[in-house]
Amino acid sequence: MRNPESFDPLKIGRFTVIRVHYEYPNEFPEEKLFIVLRHAVEKGDPVCHCIKPTSRTDRFEVDPRLLRGVILYPANQLPFFYRRTIVDPNNPLKISHSLLEREAGLGRFKIEGVMPEDFRTKLVEAIKQSFVLEPKNKKYLMECSANVGRRAIH
Image (spheres, rainbow, N blue to C red):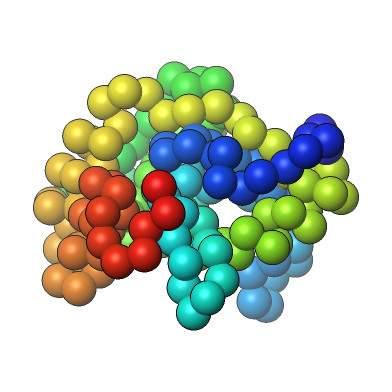
């Protein structure tokens, strides 16, 4: 991974795919891919609203109802998705800018690319079709995909 000399999280644009060293609770820390939806200020701290794509597609592929609420990319359709990958709006995450800055300083952050132009349309459709998302989460994700809502930075 490369270490940007001058790193500013706000320069990470909408629908940019980033690779960052991240640790989920009770999991081994490792590099993970995230799709940036927007930046906002939460409790005084800047954060990056993201969705984490997954290459663990089995559970989605056995239930057609789940597939309607996600975006499926075949392996290598996009240069940063080497395996069959699902973008599930029900897998959102907020990453603090301070974590991104720290990981960039350690050389554990990289911009992999940007989602295709039709991504926003597909994301909105997946959000609408999802039967597992609660209404308040649908609203939050629709705001993120449209880049509106309280305290959005950009």
